[in-house]
Length: 450
Image (cartoon, rainbow, N blue to C red; front, side, top):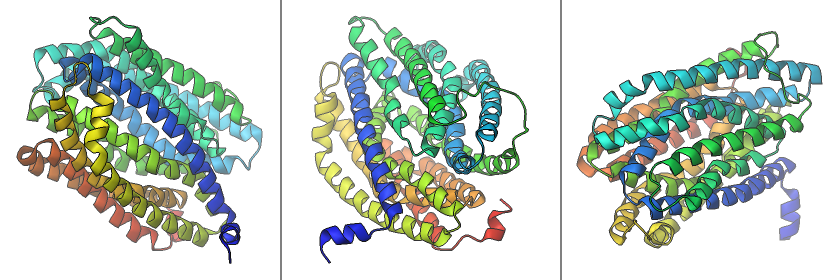
């Protein structure tokens, strides 16, 4: 059998995932290029400075809760929205209106809570920061706190698009970075903190308006004017799933703040170093793994809804092994190219050759997580499509527990490298757990109770 015949013999659902992953990867490359240019502009203008420490600390701690909620929505909402595609437009519109009504209320509450709790957050988690950096974080709060509300609507709109197997939301993820980049380029050389503040806020607003508009055109539900009620039939299932998933997602969401706290205790500019290394690492993780992960869930959910759970499981296991191998190859190549990549992206202006050496050293330790991260994402989508939310939550709690213990043990001994090593161990445990779970068929009786 020749190569073309072998390719034609591959099941159509594999083609669906591959085509969607290709589109997502293309959008991710464009988006990550915008993000890389933004990071280059920040490095050129600020280097390892108090402004970058404040920016990284504030962004992480103000966005972790809304990002946690969006993470839950991306897992539990898409199967619900895929099922709604088979119902009437009236039923879909009713659910969208109700969901957006409660999402608006939650978003406003998060904004108020973040602003009111910030002094205590600084006292508990930012005590090691200088008074100058703490003052800057309070200023940046007025950009990132409203972002909590906007992030929720971005996440819901992205789920609506993905349920239709449309992945333009991946490209729109780059809008905040692009707007901030433009703001930094237009700002004067001694402009200080305002470009980071206003560029971030305007970027959030532009992204939200754009993606909400696209989601309104993607299905019959339209704009979905917010409405506070629980009349849709999907609420009982969704509440049960969200409650279970929220436990695990909250546990995993503490990883970012936990790393920021550990970095803050190491010394000055540790947050900046961690931020530069993490953002470069996210370029690799995003393009390599998120493309397949985002593409897989709608397809697997559709297969599960048709009753062919065995085919969904077989597909996910094959994609997981393929992604694990790709992750090892990507990590090895990135290990060799890391010093060159950091220098090309950042080494100019206030960012020196000494800074390059420090960031490259931390980034190399971060590459240890790449293979396991690549391999686990498809398996997460499989368990989500099977609605095995209790198991997902339990694995997340195990992962966070290991991460917290290793951070406590390794950060004082190895510094930022220890934090990265702890993350790699966490993803290794995650992959092992998900692989064992995926190899066991989901029982209808058990999933119906979740």
